[in-house]
Length: 146
Image (tube, rainbow, N blue to C red):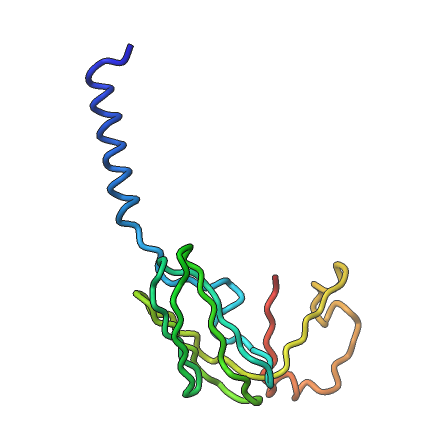
C-alpha cells in the first residue's frame, strides 16, 4: 500500500518531468561530418542536413547562396547548395532558433580511403620517405577520421 507522502512525491516528480519535457527545445543540430575546416566536393551540389524543432524554418548561406527550408514534422531538414568550383575558405551559416557557423570550409577534392588497420598508421610508421614535404606544409590537406 502506498502512503500519502510517497504518492505526493511521485506526483511531484511526474509533474516536474512533464514540465521539463514540454520546454525542451531541439536546437538546430548537424551530424558530426559537418564541421569547421571541412572540405566538400567541388563541381557537385553541396547537401547539408540535420535536425531542429518540427516545422522550424532554417536558413542556410554559403558564398552568396541562400537556401531556406522547413524541418519536417519529425524535425529533420535537408538543403542543397549549387555546385561550386574549387576555392575557399568559406563560411556556412545555418540559422534557425540557434545559429551554427562552420568556418574555414574549402571546396575541393574529397578522397575516401578505407582498408585494414594500416589505414590508421602515420606516414612515419610506413617506412615511406616523403619527397615533397613542401606540398604537405603548404597545401590545404584535411583529414576526417570516422
